[in-house]
Image (tube, rainbow, N blue to C red; front, side, top):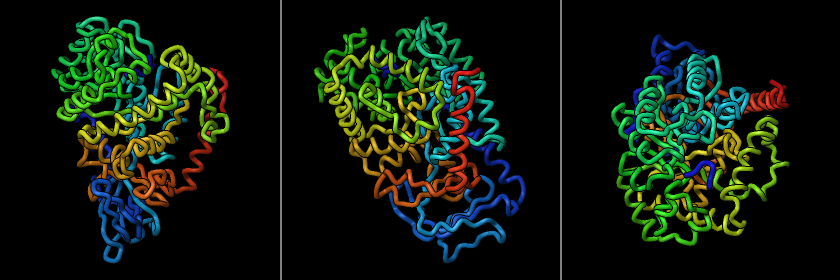
Amino acid sequence: MKIHERIKPHFGVVLLFCLCFGAASHAQKPTASDQLVLSNVTVVDVRTGALHAEQTVVLEGNRIASVEPSKSAKHPRNAPIVNSRGLFLIPGLWDMHVHLVFGDWFPDARDISLPLFIANGVTGVRDMGSELDIVQAWRNEIAAGRLVGPRIYTSGPMLDGPRPRFPSSVAIATPEDAHRTVADLKRRGADFIKLQSLIPREAVFAIAEEARKQQIPFEGHVPDSVRASEMSETGMKSFEHLIGIFEGSSPNEDDFLKGDKTEGKFLATYDAARAAALAAILAKNQTWQCPTLVWERGGNLVDVSDFSKDTRVKYVPAAWKNKTWKRFTDEITQGYGTDDLDTRKQFIERELEVVQMLRKTGVPFLAGTDTPAGVHIFPGFSLHEELQRFVAAGFTPLDALQTATINPARFLGIEDQAGTVEKGKLGDLLLLSANPLEDIANTQKIAGVVVNGRYYSRAELDKMLSRVEIAADGPSSQGIK
């Protein structure tokens, strides 16, 4: 069984957070140091796929002040100018499934994960299970400009069954536990409620009831005790890792709910008609899917993967590799990894087919990686791989790009603030040296990143990566406290 097994949104906190970021830029007339000009750039419209060449984008503080043709554009005198001729401008990317502070499993994440996101153009994340107080403190530091990192939307701790399997979790045994915990997390400032797999059935529906009462969305795993169709109908905002989809696409769903499930059984009993019926329910309710396809592939192939020569490993502390990755690897190989390799490879391909079927039915998608809690998942870097997996599933490069730009903005209820390169939007931007609509892999060809209005050149991003490499090789990476 997979370790990660398989919302009316509460937008107030997110909107307040974004507005707090924008307040400084409107408090007084900007000085030259508050302004930035990107000249002669090609702006990619992620809504339509249109390319607008020779544009000049002016930022004041952390907002886009104007987007105009370069021939007629006016920009502030003495403002710094980045000549962006030949470059492509897209919104900053979102990773919609991360874990920032996962108990003590990923020490030094503040100095590892946060800068790796920015160096890879990931300017926003949805944190799906962490220590709430720590993440909120990071968010405040980022907002104040004292810490470099992405915008953060967080659940705080995950809700799991009476015996949670992972850190940063709250044990839920009864409906009373559910009501009390949801209300407490709302009071403490969590942005949404994250469900894990082992919550008892009655408590699952108590979570949904209290979440509706508290006007806070609930998202995450479809718990083992309930059907995906039930969770969609009760208002669950997003499903992670395709949990519940294969169960609901089989006549053996009742047996699967009792725990008797493997990927081999999913494949052997998959019923296209049942899958289509479930897809229709998800599309009707606009139940978002965050399939974490890179993690799915990595977990299934963990026993035949060799990352020893992967250049990204230098950014990963030894404590992560030797302790936490080993924990996940052991649980995988002792769980669903017991299927033979050929079966697991077939399942990976069937997942891509199911993702394409769901998309064609009208189910909306988000890009997420489960970083860094997955095996051989690298903060920031793996988001670009996720976009490539969407293309492998039949998405166009534009479709894939939308899962990490405008779709997250829509999901979070901040489309008026983020998700496109337009006047008035937040200044979170990514400069690329090649067109991502021609090849989605071009999102990796990063020439510069603008986060919260602050521009980082390629040289500055390389220095940022060098600092991460040093941090990864520091004392705590050797297990020293």
